[in-house]
Structures are given as C-alpha cells and as structure tokens.
Length: 306
Ligand SMILES: Nc1ncnc2c1ncn2[C@@H]1O[C@H](COP(=O)(O)OP(=O)(O)OP(=O)(O)O)[C@@H](O)[C@H]1O
View 1 (cartoon, rainbow, N blue to C red):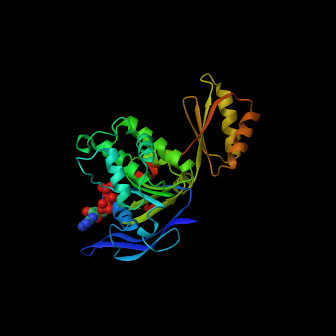
View 2 (view 1 turned 30 degrees about the horizontal axis):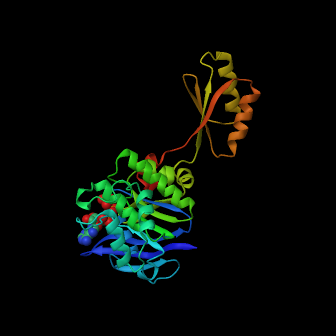
View 3 (view 1 turned 120 degrees about the vertical axis):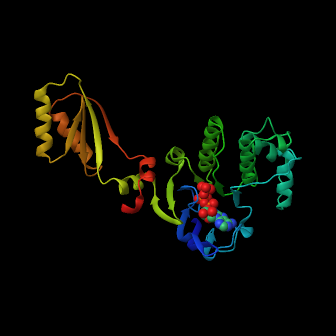
C-alpha cells in the first residue's frame, strides 16, 4: 500500500513557486528520507501533507484516499518543523492534554512509556519552560507517537539534538520501523539518511531531482564500480607486470597507489570474475573492497547531469 502519494503537488507564495508539481509515492514499511538544502521546500511539502498549508494545486493521498489528515488522525503522527507547548505544563501534563484534545485520551501508563521511549523519563515532571530545544524536540516526537500511529511524518527529528540524543533518536526510528511503522522524515544529516533510510529523495529548488534506494542512487551517480585491492607492500615488480597484462587482456582499467590496486569494473556481476582472475595469478590479496560514492558525494554534486 502507498501510505503517501502526491500528484503534481504545488505551492506558490505570492506567485513564487517553492514546491513544483511533486509527484511522489511512499510505500508502507519504508523509512523515506527527504533531503534538501535550506529553503529547498521540504517543510512546505510536509505542511501540505499534514494540512497545515493548502496546496496551490495538486493532490495529497494518505492511505490511498484524499480525505486529509483529520480523517486519518490516529493513523498518522506528525513532528512539525515548529512545535509550540504550554510552558507551565510538565511533559506528562502536555501529552495528557494533547491526547485528550485530539479525542483519544492516552492512559498515564502509555504517556510514561512514550516519554521513556524518547528519553524524557527523568524530566517528565519538569515544567516545559525549563526544557532545552532538544528536549522539546523529543517531546514533539513523543506527541507524534502517543497514539501509536502507522505512519510518522517527522520534520528534522534529529536537528538540534546532542550527539548522544541523535544516536538515541536514530535507534528509535529504526526500532519503530522494525515494529512495522512507515516513516517519512526530512533531514540535513547525510550520514543519518545514508545509515537509516530505505528510500531517499533529494529535493532541489522545489523539485525532486533524484529518488531511489541508496544503492540505486549510487548506481545512477556512478556508472562503474572501483574495486580496491591491497597487495603485499613487498610485491615483486614481476608480479605487478603479470597483474597488468592480465587486467589489460580483460580490458579492465586500473591504477596503483603504493601497494593498493584499483580496478574499475562496469557492473557488480563483473567483480567475482575479476577476483578469480587475480587469484589465478597467485598474488596474495590482503583486503578487497568496493568503493561506493557516499550520499554526501551524490548530494554535493549538482544532480542535473544524472
Ligand atoms: N509562509 C511562507 N510565506 C512565504 N514564503 C515562504 C513561507 N514558507 C516558506 N516560504 C519560502 O519557501 C521556501 C521553502 O521553504 P521551506 O521552509 O519549505 O524549505 P526547507 O527545505 O524546509 O528549508 P529548511 O531546511 O531551511 O527548513 C523558502 O524560500 C521560504 O522562504
């Protein structure tokens, strides 16, 4: 099932288009990472998914129907880019108030469990005016989770958190995914998206410039695989020559850096035969690794040429 689908979703502010005809699908069970530079239009896109903003044109389908978020409010949990809280309430009081207001009052046990899940157990009774930005972010995630929704829409769930809390939040997202939830999240953290997201979309100037799994993005970005092989630091010249003539015979371009041999192959399927070819020469190989472009390299390159 497609839990989110947009069709030509567009938003313009005073005639300036910031989200331009985005057609996108998020399948159930994905951790979908939405990447983009500041001002690319990510929050505006999320705000249209969650009915905070009305699209200029286009459609949003949630769970295959275009009935809006209210019709699905217990199936979806949202962490917006900006949450506001009552300063005089504690986290427990806030979640109790919020859940009552949304018509599905959570039990005290559920509230405390949720606060423990996001790492706010010890601070659960403190007034929110004493909370840091990062603690408020965790409370926003707790609010998104309180009804145990199937789909989580999280705008920058880890920005503003300290390093330990970032790791905790990433583990939590993976854990929620393992429990069967679908997650749609924006992030500035490329390592995070590379590590945890099963699908990635890169937004650029209001449009999706690239989309797929990390593997698919890597393949679109780089047409070849580079296999890096570590040989003995005392490899004889004669062995280097034998390697060269064997690789030349197979028309495989290669280069050396000290005792590392780099060989370019056109597909993953070509890697086993390359390794067999080298083994036949009886040259000792200490390490073999396939160099993949990182998401950072893919993101920083202008994706227009892809
Ligand atoms: N209410 C608004 N009125 C006018 N312009 C707006 C409004 N909201 C957003 N914009 C503009 O739309 C563009 C996209 O903003 P948006 O917040 O969606 O980007 P973003 O990708 O989420 O950025 P960031 O990563 O910095 O949060 C920006 O140029 C922003 O100034």
